[in-house]
Image 1 (cartoon, rainbow, N blue to C red):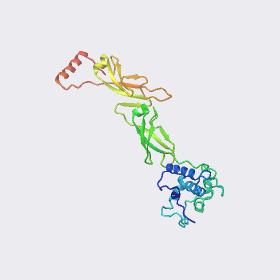
Image 2: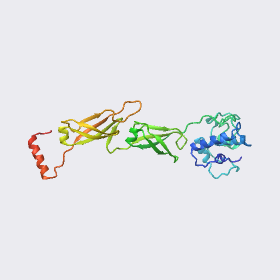
Image 3: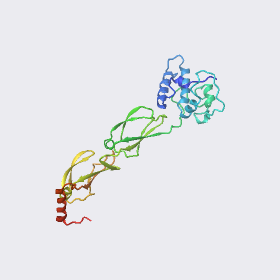
Image 4: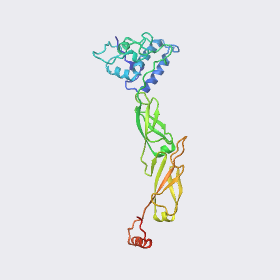
Length: 297
């Protein structure tokens, strides 16, 4: 029997992705469909295209076919190598009824069993369902600001292409964004979210935490201080006699999420003492010690 170069039948390179392969197949199947095509050899080409995609469109069959090697020429006399284990039980693929398919070649039936496709001449989209390729998981690193605003990010896919992906507002770290059919094997691609460590904020779920350094007199006397939030700057009134570690809640200033309550921002006060790096400053601390006569422990 003659060897059939299925890649040549579809006019594609051997390293083509499953996604692009499917696009090419659909284009050719429409072009040569006997019901609409005006090509002289439409029916024969339609059968060839279906047969080629029946093999290359299935990840396992394609792998077994590729194991034969790329050195065979189209039309070259071919016999399966001794001990070759690439053949399939026809019951695993398609309807398994001889004569019920598209009349596949002897090469196909010898290698993959008869009735493997289940294509009908009346419609190229009547292919029997195949086992879905396993999903691929890729880590997508984003900034806290992306999660807060729901920004778009440019993402390089495993097949080398770059696409723009919308980051769902409020998505939590570890959650996944599913991109249907974008994996290198033609299956779904899952982008698992990892949030970059922020230079200013900590976050827990939808709540955001900001450590705010304040001077002893600001803590003792109270002060209005401009602080940062993910939504912009605002004035925060620090009450008099505040203690280090005090948490001040800013309701609704955390990470929003559509359909759920908005998180909060917590400002954690951190009292910082100025350095006693001159004699005058050291004397000031000595005077404080005498005046207050106070033990903080």
